[in-house]
Length: 303
Image (cartoon, rainbow, N blue to C red; front, top):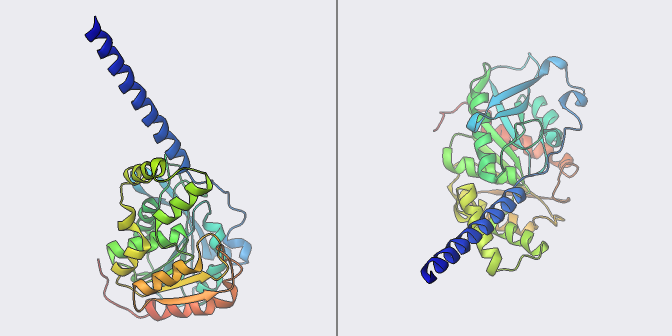
């Protein structure tokens, strides 16, 4: 009778522990879900010709559909076209990256504005993550290269915040883009997570340590491996880091650390916060010149 009681107690304790782990897992999945913000405007609101803007659906990972706008220059511009894929940040969407469209289009670039999964008008998923942003970038690049009139070997990336980290992650893995423009990238996701937990008053190292390990398990990647501090050193293409001096979300010192980690990276400080939409206006010429210098000339496509 005693052994049976002990066995039942052990089963109950195991079930309770499993239940707590399940609840913790569900809480983390909710924490990894980004707020979905609808588009407030689109490329046509910039006054672009209707025949230069196309809404497209792109096949993403696990059968998910990605929404994007493909914006092309006037027909008079010589083909094939260099192209730029633009990826927004966490809780944002493609429409929030519109300020870069007109300058790139005028310079002869095709521009793909992409909504990541769980964002904008793209399909939902159980959670969003920086590695999944990188998967969506890869899907978008595959779509771009399949379009007639696009120079498949002359494609660059622009990413903001998590989108910038994902762009660097893709460039570190595939070596198939000619340049990356990183807007407001953080240096290391562990630091971002620890800052978020501190705001939520999650004690570290007791609970916080477990949260970080479990998040790594859920997203299927080590923070150290996917951190921009690591991926920027593995990227073989030129990188332009743009960061606001007044950024209170990701401090400017993160950009300085990234620039120091990879000699040859260009750092462009701007007067602005994390968002950068307004702060970019005086510097679009620099962004376009950087991309034109790296993506305009024909080159051999790398894999």
